[in-house]
Every structure is written in structure tokens, then in C-alpha cells.
Image 1 (cartoon, one colour):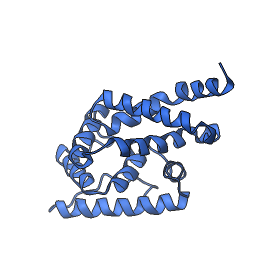
Image 2 (spheres, one colour):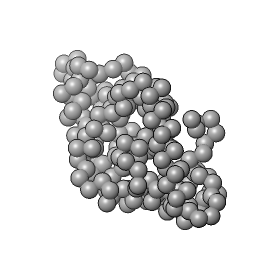
Image 3 (cartoon, rainbow, N blue to C red):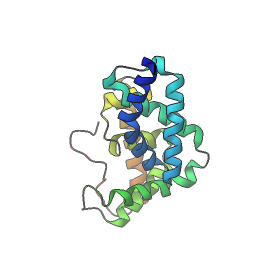
Image 4 (cartoon, rainbow, N blue to C red):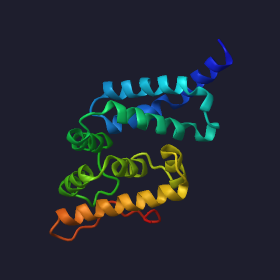
Amino acid sequence: MSNRDEEFARVVVTHRNALLRYGLRRLDNPSAAEDLVAETFVVVWRRFDELPPRIEELFWLYGIAGRVLANLRRGRQRSMRLEARLAFEREGELANPRYTREDVEALLAALGELSPEERELIQLTYWEKLSYREIGIVLGCSEKAAGIRLSRARRQLRERLNQSSTEETVSPLRREGTDS
């Protein structure tokens, strides 16, 4: 086995589960998530000469997986609610149990109204728990640009949540120290 083959095998073994979780959070069935992982590694093999330093590998892989996912999806609007609901059910309960099922449904509806780019920013922040720097690596932009884009996506989500609710609610997107 060549050095390239060994290094590729190391990357697969190291990051396969993270990419599978990434796919499971975004797709409506495990088989589709497995296909996403396989397709991502096909692209990685072709672009292996571009492999970044180990500390940035996973973020680079998330970027590739995101682009593969964009190519695989055709009915994203129709499936967004189902994907988010399945992710919620897989995760068990919200991190903050103050929120009711109605709060979650309102959030899912508001997420469904965002652009795919805005949704991805929200998902990378709250589902993958990435920092601005890490999001910048995934999206191929600077940390500052990632923060600005995320701020805009949060504002759009808040506006949609406020439009859909007639009573005052606390946004589940308020996390101390992360709101820009």
C-alpha cells in the first residue's frame, strides 16, 4: 500500500463517523447519509493533494460534504421540515427543556423559510457546534465573514419566528456569547 493510500485510509477511519452524523442530521434516512459519506470520500480521493493540515481536515471534509449534499438534494424545501424533525427526535429532547413542542414546530417552520445557505449556517452552529473560524473553513471564507453571515442568518430566523408568533416567546437561538 502506498503512502497516499495509507494516509487516505487514516482520514476515512478518523472522520467517517463525524461525516455520517453530519449526513444523518441533514438527510431523512441512514442509507442516504451513508451515500453522502461514500460520495464525499470519492471527492476527497480526487482532491487528496489539497488535504489541509490535520487540525483542519474535518472542516475541509464538512465543506466537501456540504457541496456533495447540495448536488444530491433536489427537493430540499419539501424535506427540510422532515429532516429537522427527525434530527430533533434522534437527539431526544432540546438542550433547553423550557421549549415546548409548539416552540420546536415554530422553529422548524421558520427554518424551512430560510435560504439553504442560511439554514446551513444555523445547522453548522447549533447542530455541529462549530466556531466562526471552523464555519469559515467549511464555507471557504474568513472567520469574520462567517460571523457576519451567521449574524444575518440569525436575524432572518428571528424575523420569521416573530412573524409567525403572536405571543411573546424567547428565541431558542439565544446562546450566551454567540449572538453577534
